[in-house]
Length: 178
Image: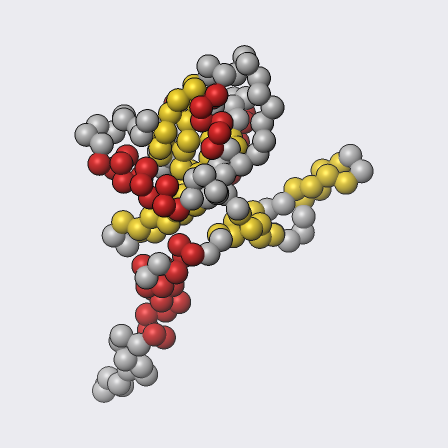
């Protein structure tokens, strides 16, 4: 049987597909200039009872984020302030800065009422993988730790890039930016 010629060139946009075209745009920096949409299932309360929504919703996230591509793998990380210890982190969570809560809380987007009992509590500025965000949030909150979105004005893309590069260049995996 005679082989038929291909319908399109192997390197055409159609053959590369939407995913590869999107990754090419991502590599060109397209994702670094847009806000990210988080795909979440919504649960809401109405009249005191919980109901699961019939459809999923997209939330626009104002939480600072950074897109990291290593080889063929691309991940989006969101910046948060947390009081949780590293033992509760997923393997993909990255600590950028560690200090007392009194110091780190300044990076939080939400206004926090200062509680002197929390002032000396250890806290961190962390990057959480978008694919593990719901799990990470539940884990922290399940152990009564705070997870606060970082302020996009204080922890913007340039700051995240700078601290992530410092973290990646540190001699040991346990050091964080001070």
